[in-house]
Amino acid sequence: MIACLGYSRAGAGVLVFSPQTEDLLAGIAGCLRRLGGLPRTLVWDRQAAIHGHGGRPSQPFAGFCGQLNVDWHFCEPADPQAKGAVERLQGYAESNFEPGRRFANELDFQDQLDAWFAKVNARTHRTLRERPVDRLAQELAVMAPLPARLPDTARRWVTRVAPDPYLRVDTNDYSLDPAFVGRRVEVVVEQRTVTALALDTGELACRHARVFARHRTITALEHARVLRAGRQPADTPVELRPLARYDALIA
Image (cartoon, rainbow, N blue to C red; front, side, top):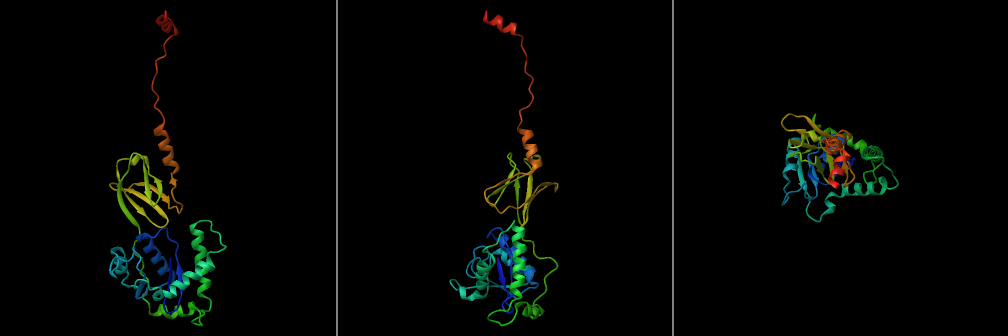
């Protein structure tokens, strides 16, 4: 996700896991944190996860803006020129940042992206004939400060742990502690972690690093050991009969 301020043209970017609402809101929060202040208005196209209908925001996006006390504006359909500044920055990132780079993981990607934006914001802008980082200082002076804590953007739901104790997030299956089979847990999906807590006691049922790869099964070592022990056949005593008994049956 790419964000660009209108006056300074300072930009920021955040790698998110999906185009789902909660992930996009996490991306917005990450961009605002990197830019250092709150604009008066957030300008968006009519993406379904953010835009509701008829120029109105979706309920999660409206709640997010309400917590930050910022307004929103949705561009008209088929009007890319309305957000040309961020579109140009997006195109520049696709042609200048991504080609030729290698990333160890999503954390390395974000670190390299932050470093790239630090250089981009410090270059002389072709149109402005000034450096965005210099104009950003002026822009932040009239922007609202960031709150001490940005809105919670985690995805949450409650489910019951199935006999096959796995939890599906996006396209991946994450293991749960088999000891919680039959109990209800609250699932919390954040940008870095997938967590499940027992609804009645708050006990930890699982904590995994969220995985970008698709269609994977992620099993914690301690969960695998319990599952393996539960699948082994029980030791059932078997009678050992003397061979003479079989000889008597044959005779």
